[in-house]
Image (cartoon, rainbow, N blue to C red):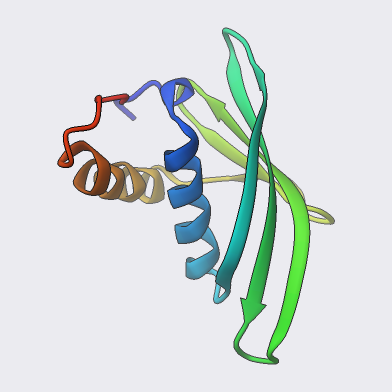
Length: 110
């Protein structure tokens, strides 16, 4: 991983969560994301997400956490052990983020 993932912003977190949950057969209805901690080692976001599951037409809501370290990203979900995201997935999100936001003339953050 060539990027320092502690330098991300709110839009990157939203994009990462949308892609993560869409890869896991859910449709994201809404997010509420709050940065709750930041230090030299990591940046932590708490999120409330509402998911629509097309298989049984239920809407689930829960709170989770995303931890951004220099070289890894970890998602902590209720009743699930921590999930370390694969580098390939992160590279895909970084590329998508660059295509959407950095081409629009926004300041480069990664």
